[in-house]
Structures are given as C-alpha cells and as structure tokens.
Image 1: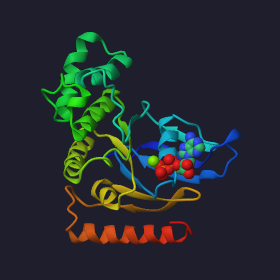
Image 2: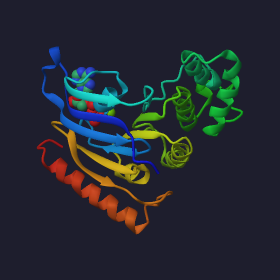
Image 3: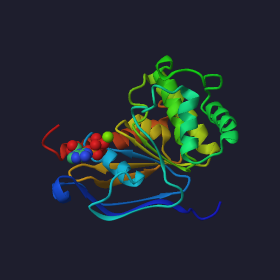
Length: 252
Ligand code: ADP
Ligand code: MG
C-alpha cells in the first residue's frame, strides 16, 4: 500500500445561513481529512449540520469561512430520496448521467448494462421508477452516481427510508462496491448501528455548532454482525458518547 492520499480536506470550515451568512453558525471551526479509500461514517443528531457539511463537500454550497478541498473528479452524491426522474426508466436514468459526462452513444448501452449488473439489477433496465421497490430505486440511484465516474461517493442517509432487511442487503452491496471500485465514501447517518456496520472510520459531529467531537478507527472485518462482541462494545461506546453529547443540550 502506498501512503494514503488525501481525497477530501476541510480546514477550519464554518457555515452560517441567513443574509450574508451572518446567522448563528451551523458548522464552526470544523476540520476533517478523508484519505482516499476511506469509508467515513459521519454520525450526528438531526440538525447537527451533517447535510450542510456534505453539501459543502459536494460543492452545492460554499463555506462562510475556511477551506474545502476535494481532490480528483467532482464527487457523486446520493440522497435519502433517490431523486430519479420518474419519466425515464432505470436504464435511462443511468444513461443520462453518462450522457451528461459526454460519453459517446456507442459506449453508453454497454456501460449502463455494466453498472446495472454492479448493483445487481441486470434485466431491470426497462422498468419505470414506479415499478421498482424502494431498495431497487436506491440501487438505480447508486448506479447513476457511479455513472458520474467519480471515485468519491457522498451519501446522505441513503437507506434511512428502507426497511431493515433491505437496508442490511444494501449495506453488504455497498461494502462490496466500495472495495471493488476502490471508492472513497463519506456517509452521513444518525444511526450508530449503521455507522459501526459500515465505516472504516466513524466521526461524531457535535451540534450547536457542528464540529468533529470524536472519532473512532474501526479495524473490524466485514460483514460486521451486531452480536459480535467487538461490534457490540464499539456500538455501546459510541452510543454513550452520543448520549453525553445530547445531555449537553437542554432541548431533546
Ligand atoms: P442534519 O443533516 O444534521 O440534520 P442540516 O445540515 O440539514 O442538519 O441542518 C443543520 C441546521 O442548519 C438546521 O438547524 C437547519 O435548520 C439549518 N439549515 C440547513 N439548511 C439551511 C438553509 N438552506 N437555510 C437556512 N438554514 C438551514
Ligand atoms: Mg440531513
């Protein structure tokens, strides 16, 4: 292994909303470095600024102060709501991303097939969005994100709306794709179990203002089972820290 290259770097980042960014800062003095190949789970309460942070990394918004650097091609983003175009079928949704990237028409059909196979949706190309289950829609959204050709994937609570069985299936698929495609993943969640199940690092974001409170390096192999003592110990430790953080705030 070569020394790890930095994929994402945030230095002293602050973000406030309101006119001229002069409201109370949502994020203040946040530092975070993500090495290429990391799977970082960003864990924080609702309203702690997780989506704000991801939007800054995606370049969808600018920090009020500080620096956000993303090395490599622009990152691909996956949202909680799949955000697929309902008037296009599964294959066309993926193909659109290839077309926007300027991929030649002759290559596109084979690439759509390859990406749908990667997310285990072979043969589903002609399905309309409304004919797909929630899990399948997120698979299409993942294929579309990968079609953007970035090796950085930003995920904003992408599986929150899914049932537990579908979610754990997609966790396994995501780990397989992360490993195979050598991606760097920044994954936002408010679920400790999800963070411990997926991350090579778990980063706790404090709230009011949001900044890195603590982080854990997770050297456990996949798949991680919740009944595994090491997984359970880490989950309890992180949960205790989150409760401690919640206790700092008067309002629940
Ligand atoms: P999280 O994703 O952790 O739930 P968000 O980043 O969505 O948190 O929001 C953090 C805080 O910033 C919340 O108080 C939210 O109301 C506020 N906020 C988020 N986006 C905007 C916006 N575009 N304009 C004003 N306030 C916003
Ligand atoms: Mg959010």
